Amino acid sequence: MSKQFDVVVIGAGPGGYIAAIRAAQLGMSVACIDAWSNAKGGPAPGGTCTNVGCIPSKALLQSSEYYEHAGHHFADHGIEVKGLGLDLGKLISRKDTVVKQNNDGILFLFKKNKVTFFHGTGAFSGQVDGGWSIKVSGPAEEELVAKHVIVATGSSPRALPDLPFDEKQVLSNDGALAIGGVPKRLGVIGAGVIGLELGSVWRRLGSDVTILEAMPNFLPAADEQIAKEALKVLTKQGLKINLGVKISEVKAAAKSVTVKYTDAAGAEQSLVVDKLIVSIGRVPNTQGLNAEGVGLKLDERGFVTVDEDCRTGLPNVWAIGDVVRGPMLAHKAEEEGVAVAERIAGQHGHVNFNTIPSVIYTSPEISWVGQTEQALKTEGRAYKTGTFPFLANGRARALGDTTGMVKVIADAKTDEILGVHIIGPQASELISECVVAMEFRAASEDIARICHAHPSLSEAVKEAALAVDKRSLNF
Ligand code: FAD
Image 1 (cartoon, protein in one colour):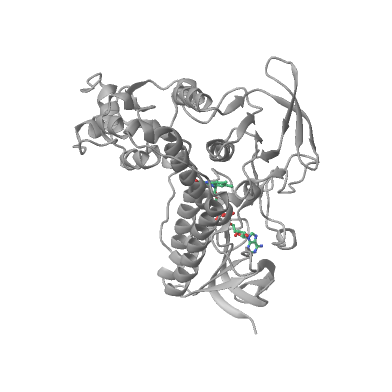
Image 2: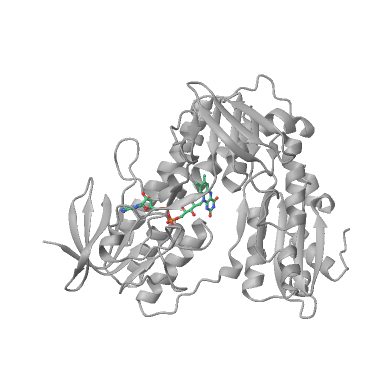
């Protein structure tokens, strides 16, 4: 006998598990299916984000930053560290513990919210009386019937043509988060968020890291002024970032990988590394869903086609997160999950794509929301900017972390904030104030007149807002 639910969610990444919880909160009967298994074969809900993405990368970034601070920065504070050592096994197993806490947390939340969880792969069988028939196979074997289906199957790392990931020499994010010994020479293909974060982890732990990037500009999605500063700082830290390269050949041997490429000046180059991380983008997960069998439409890049409300072309079938268009970010997936659950309940869920923040967790962190200066120039919109350096912020000086700046961009006439761009300490946290301001369509004057605690890094946001009107007080 098949089990009946109001909503069946396929995938328990940040999009899927949040959609399932919100739907349950709204009084619907909900099942969530997820295929991810832990090392013991048990369920590991949380998707890419929890298992091999956001959470483990931040755990390693934190540990490696402590290591670098102990080795290089504690002395500035008068703290002497003698006999500093690295227990990489412990560092990695701490990361695994953090991941497991998150997996367990999601299973607990499912129980608390009465979401029925199935560990296995979900596929459409077809339309039946009362909705969609979904077959679960794997550890759990079930036949479910759902009035509504939410596809939240996420994405997987893109490999280079003819160079599959072996996770020994040629690593995806998965292998790059679990290297058994610090590689002497590490290559990274792709200077995007993942490449920069993972490259930073291993550089801090002692690797000589070379990053090869095909694009001629560094971080083209970021504001140019911030990207320029980021390139300068990260290069100074020791990341060798080569832009505008064209890779001609990658050959993996038993203990090394050779990458042949043409550099930006047109010269032939050869890079030999012990391990190579390939971070050139991600592909949507739709195989195994029986998409074709039921007529679930995919676009030319393989993403599930949806309208702005995340409706697919099939009745009562929705899709959210990395498997559909838009930025591949956990918080974007979550917001779509909440909005779809609310739409199913007859409410008016909404996701504002203009105020989705972007963060790169390097040191210093980089974050932004809204438009860049270069985009506004292209659009021909008149704007004004204000910047404030952390060098002039008392809290940043006390922290000993004064790199970077805050930049506020506002409409030239109305003063509405159009974008905020930050490179500096705690940029990931500072951006939230700016997201709230933009969501409420605040003017730069609003932030400039709001009392900010002293001494705090957030004063740099206020000062940048004051600088829009050329009345910065501390610079
Ligand atoms: P996923 O998290 O990919 O989850 C999909 C789930 O569905 C998986 O568990 C998968 O096994 C399961 N699944 C697939 N097919 C089926 C099926 N047929 N049946 C059952 N289950 C199925 N984003 C941020 O916002 N901040 C960050 O700091 C950040 N850091 C990242 C670092 C790295 C190294 C990587 C790789 C990604 C990072 N991301 C980050 C991106 C983020 O992980 C994704 O945007 C997010 O996980 C997408 O969520 P999702 O729910 O759409 O899909």
